[in-house]
Each structure stands twice: as structure tokens, then as C-alpha cells.
Length: 363
Image 1 (cartoon, rainbow, N blue to C red):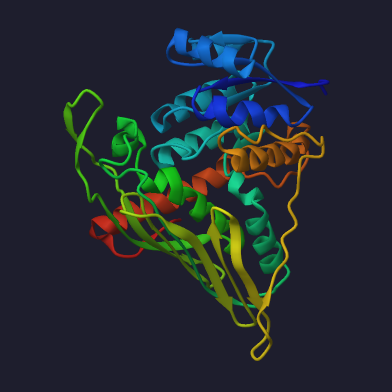
Image 2: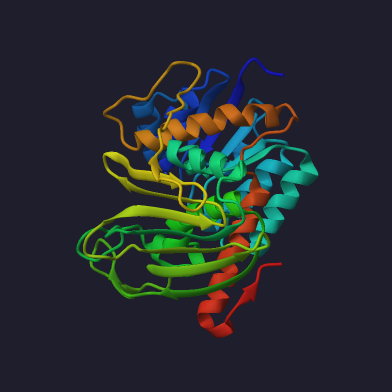
């Protein structure tokens, strides 16, 4: 095994702001190169975040002999081509969500990594949020008993016209855009992590603001959803709903609740942290607040408190720690491209359902 796994990152947005600082919190990794579509932008970001090399040719990057891992952190319509090329070049692959534009692409990516015998990881770092890790431990230990129903919900003005100006691809379905791929994908992964294999989906997806303009004022029509309500039926018998809006006037806190034959769990996530984190056991038992224990990187390093996305940086670093066994060929709890495929099947089914197909099976 190498002393350090050498990393090349494709994508200078989330890649520069989150992936670079996260890899630096884990001593076994060394970020060698940062690649962007524009050479000048890649060089500027690489200099700012202290990565020694920059590039604009991603095909050449994935072929380099001095890299062990390729991170794909680009618009979603590029994920499949890049991840498949990296796997075929013998590189371990870390892919940001959503895995791709559809399940066909996700399956091709998964099969390429598995055929090449390389490790893969999906950027579902929210599993490492303290409150989500605690919920997983509780449900795995049987706290709910037989699970009945779960619901996660949140609204925000992140794509609302006049409030923010997202990149055009984020509003175009054919380019992998949409609120579901940007945000709800985390919830669908979370719910699948908690309750197992999905069986069928019934959903409603809407584009409330199709009339858009790019920065120079040119008009275009958004085709991707900005509001969603997705109900998933799991093989375990549980039902779950993930709902949200990216175009609400005001933000509402993230809310999660789950109930089963023996217990309930609920919490609200606010900017100050989780509130009302309460669980109750068998009927008649008192509801009690739960204590969160925040895991920190074992290196003792932490990101600059003033840096953006600190919570995601720490969670990603914890994911990367737990990915190390997979790089050696051992078992790891880190979600893989196959987990991304599972989520993409839910998303594809949700879109078909919303178009009028009713309940759609994910198998």
C-alpha cells in the first residue's frame, strides 16, 4: 500500500471548497492536482487552496501514473464519462452526487468500477452528520421495532428567481440538474441507508419557475424540478416521504421524524444545530432528548472556522477515513457507486411517477 494515496480532483467549485480541505484532514491522502474546464480558473483556485498542480485536460489527468484516486466533482452530465474513464485507468473513483443523469449511466459507472477492481465512493457525506449517524445507530439496534413511516422535509430559496442565480445546468433536466439531484438525493440515500432496499415510488415533481434568465439577461426555460414530494415503499415494509422546495420565499428548518411498532425518533435541524432531538420507546414510555456525540477526524486537524461549508468538510473527512479499508480491498461502510445507482433508480421512478405512471417499481 502507498504511504499516501495521491488524489486528482476534477472540478474547482465544490472540489476546491470542500474536497481539498477534507482530504487534508486525513494524513493518508495527498491532493496532487486540481482540474477545471478553464485553465486560468483552475490555476487560480489551485493557488488559493494550495494544490501544487492545476490542469484543464481531465482525460490526461485520469491517465496519469502518479495518481491513485480521481474525484469527479463536476456538473452531473459529465460524471459518467469521467468516472468510467478513471476506473478503466485503474484509479479509485470518488463521485459527487447525483451519480449521473439516469440509472443507465449509473449502472455503466458501477459496472466499470467493479470490473476494474477499483474502490468507489459516493459523496453522501451527510451520513456522517452526528444526528444522522445517531439515528442510524438507533434504528439498526431496533429502537423503532418494525418501521412504519419516516418523513424528511426542508424548504429554501436556493433556486428562487431574484434571490439566487444558480448555474444554468442546475435548472436543466437533461444536464443532470434539479432539486432532487442537488438536495433530495441525500435524503433518498439516508432513507435507504435506514430502511433498506426500495421497492416502489410514487411522486410529484414540479417546475414552479420555468422562466429564467442567465447572468447576461438571456432568457431560457428551466426543465428541472424545483419542488418535490417523493414517497418510497421499502422491502422492509416501511414507507418514507422526502419532500422539499428550492424556491420557497423563506427557509424552513430541516425536519426528520420516524415511527415504528416500538418507538419514535424526531428532530429539527437549525443553523445552531439539531433541536428537539427526541426519542420514545414502547408505548407509554417518556419521550427523552438524545445527546449527540460529534466525531472528529482522528488526525486532530479541523478546517478553518472561517472557511465555507465546514460541516460538509468535516463529514467528508470522516467519510474519507472510513474509505481507507476499501482502498486496501477490505470492507468499508462508505456508500459506493452501487449505492448511487440505488438512489438514481428511485429518482428515475419518481420522475416517471410524476409524469403519470402512478406507483413505479425500482427493480
